Image 1: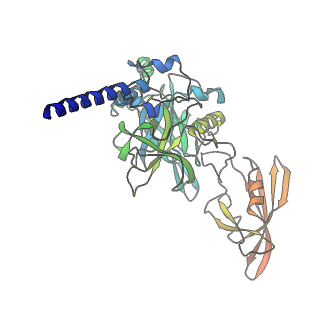
Image 2 (image 1 turned 90 degrees about the horizontal axis):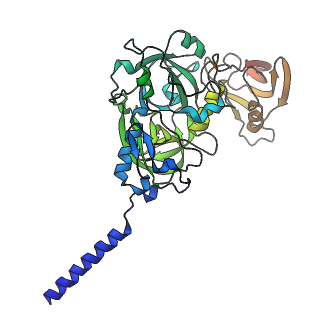
Image 3 (image 1 turned 60 degrees about the vertical axis):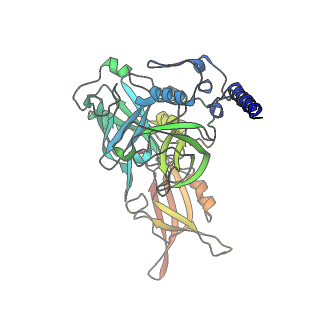
Length: 441
């Protein structure tokens, strides 16, 4: 009996092993990109002495991860300012070249994506530049302490050409408050902190992150990794995780509602502006937010979003509208006017709008006051009135505001109750152009 049992278990074990071997154990199946047609680049991707001889689907996930990190590890930069420290990603901007003739692949010019909040500070006069900024590129040994790879710049409220004329290596292309994306330009023809210029050979070796085309779809549960500067002092740190939610509505401090990818990749203060990559080594997100009360609940700005607030569309618009005299901006967003409007909520049959607050130092400061009741609004463009309308609801007011362009004059007629009597007032507010990237209302 014992002999028969022994034979039985031996056969059972052999059968089990045969089933396991036949199943193929493809650890990357859940992350495969069946959405994209096969191409030669899927079977062999060359990147600085790293060759992917098979697709990630056919490889062990650990090998795919290690090779992807090797492909992009030098795309991450450390960003330091007087008030903060964070991350950025060197990108191949060929995807955006058509948006601006001045954008072209140039060994002397690097473009770096980061978060808008990394290059701006908020004050009583609205959003302003952070002032002095330092970018540390990783050298060939992935060291961030090599003075030959450390560059300086200035971000402020003057036009970009002013800072370029001062000899700064780093200038701002443009930024967008609502999407939390900014683009920096680093001129490698300028001297580094060491006083030297990078050789053409070393310039050519700098890695640039590749961005997938718009046919790429991120998958729930997909393995991803980030490279950034957690705590502001640990540049080049790699963290791995998965996509926890494809599109999460999140209320971000000082920004408001955003549509972000939720990730369980470990990020910390200092990780903002860092890259989120897939196992192909493609840049699919920019890390920008996290929940400090819980672990492994973090967020990234996706490369593509249906509402055109993915970082790819934002970067195209920033580069496409940038010039020597003005920073790039996103269509439909303007310098903040600095006042808030509310609709009366007393169920009155005669609704009306009133000013609820006015920001100190804003465009509306000294012209409007809290509790002013708005009667009519008009827009003048190039000296001619193009619109005049009575408004009594928020929707009506928003329609007028959506028509404003830089250079317009917004005229608000309102009534003001003061010292026991009501008087009519008129406020003319000139819509300013983008001296800095303080976009939105």
